[in-house]
Image (cartoon, rainbow, N blue to C red; front, top):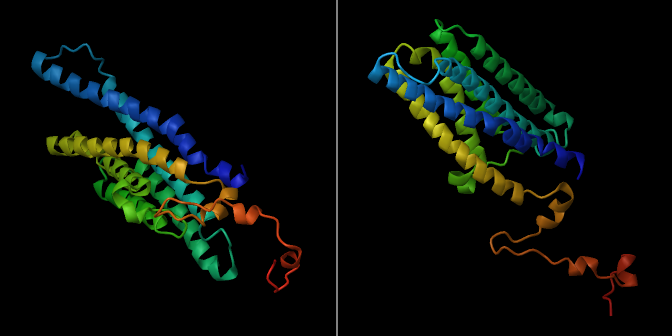
Length: 254
């Protein structure tokens, strides 16, 4: 494996080791929080579920949003660095490269400001959430990012971007769910959809790891007929050449 191939493993490594365990923790705590709320309403103040489950759910949910956006940016950075504008950087592409770098910086800064926005500042929370989401979408539109547009309904890219946008939106409306039942229902619905997208991410990500070749295999696989699922066997390229062909002669070998 070359350096490019090792870098391509960072995104799935972080997803398996960090993000999916946090998803499990957040989902479990979300269920316990709801159960405690239901039990408290039915039995008064009696519930075996500890009261700290709500704050812990909030804390882990904030962590989840940061990690989801983070690994999305890691995947996009890998794509534009090794397959997009930075693959063969030339003076003509410098403005585009600078724009991409600024977009990464702006997206990360917007997410940081979203975390720092106070609960009584709904306008700023909306602004920074919008800027973060716009940054993800714009970066995802860059050359080198494989979007699988011909099968968008099972695209790892579209699932991931939509899940990241839902996480950003959920983070932005957290202060509102304590003020209105409608916002709480919206928060629950958004995260249920996000959970389904994460399940889809597990499937589509595993599929894409099988489909993406190592860098030294790309040239050969580029000759494959994907519609008919056939590839050249390499017999022609491995066959010894005739002497006159080896030195560039135009005569036909006998």
